[in-house]
Amino acid sequence: MTGPIIRDQRAFASGALFLAFAVFFFVTALNYPAGTAARMGPGFFPRLLAIVLAAIGLVVMMGAVRRTAERQALLKWDMKGLAWVTGSVALFALLLFPLGLVGALFVLILVSSRASSEFTWKGALANAAILIALCLAVFVYGLGLQLPVWPALFN
Image 1 (cartoon, rainbow, N blue to C red):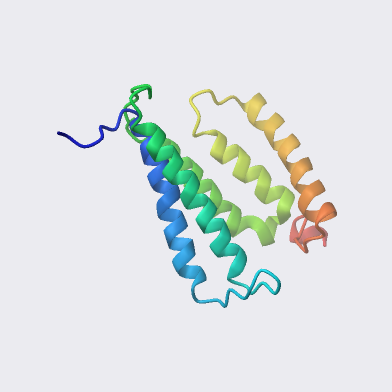
Image 2 (spheres, one colour):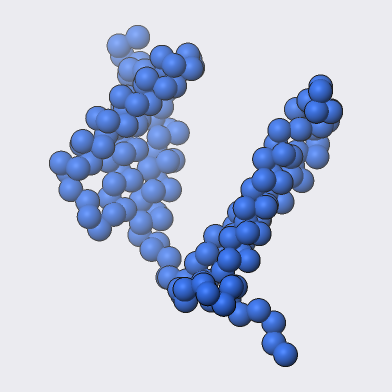
């Protein structure tokens, strides 16, 4: 008798990643007092989210070993795309205060768009306009976060 066979390797890997993140955040949240449901401490919500994320990961992993699961192999990583996306996030962090949210998001979106084989300048600029408007509406005006919106020259 053999153990379960992983039929959908992509789903199994996704579930395992969810589970790994859940364990990491649960263990990290142990440093904070949980409190009770009536008086929640700073560790209560992160632990609860970690448990939910772990449950989702386990459900996804169990679905990947079902007999009825579609066979899907884990694809090779696109290192070029990963580098573009990772680099764009690093650039965003470096450029947020000198360029403001608008400039840093513009650079983030244009650079990360290069990760796709379907990249076009027209599409990247349209995405940038829409995402910058949404981020301004949600984070600056909706939530009132104190972020520099424009480059330091204009403040």
